[in-house]
Length: 261
Ligand SMILES: Cc1cc2nc3c(=O)[nH]c(=O)nc-3n(C[C@H](O)[C@H](O)[C@H](O)COP(=O)(O)OP(=O)(O)OC[C@H]3O[C@@H](n4cnc5c(N)ncnc54)[C@H](O)[C@@H]3O)c2cc1C
Image (cartoon, rainbow, N blue to C red; front, side, top):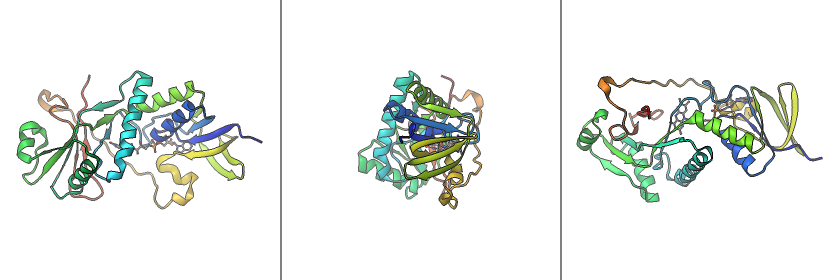
């Protein structure tokens, strides 16, 4: 007997909302579940800003995926007729031998990406707000910028619904049980069946996929907003988005100047 859905997507944050939308647009019979109201403040995809970079310092192998991501963000904007991606440039700041600088340079060289190097003295003239140490430099990725995650999630969900996806919002999935013919899904006291399942429950993934317990646990991340002093406008020409290597392997402070358009 065939299942009523080809794919069930569990969790409709940044990942799940995009997944339901792309599947529905291809005519796949898709059902999506979100435990809370979409884009809520306890997940990872809330707020109005997420950094995007093309010259990815983490590894050059991400760059083709990023080209595809940029295409998809532009595609989403076209369908929604709404601005989601703001290109401001991203400054990647650190000592010349830091991971952020060496990694960004490697990605840019391998993929022939534009990447302007600025000394501390040049930075003081052009982007005085950053106050670099004498032994730091910056690489400017002109294609970097920031995305609006909540607008993206709501946009993807609107498109998914318009393309025929069944969306169950405020409905937590309690259990998934695969068998030879698909997957059983228990949610909100009901049972559902699909051929396949995508678990996109972010940092809660180990509740449904216990094998990930050792590596995925929710933690709190603190975001701070500062009101600029003396009428300093967060104009990208004066303050592009930035990422700074502070020598700590686990974190690199980053931020954006967001201004009322
Ligand atoms: C403060 C902060 C800043 C960040 N900055 C950046 C950045 O600048 N650039 C960047 O690229 N990345 C950034 N990230 C990372 C990026 O935001 C995340 O990788 C991304 O949002 C993850 O999306 P997700 O869909 O996997 O998870 P989430 O957005 O957390 O979505 C998971 C969803 O699953 C739902 N769910 C959980 N359990 C169930 C269940 N059993 N049944 C149904 N639904 C369920 C949750 O309610 C949630 O809505 C940042 C993350 C944080 C927290």
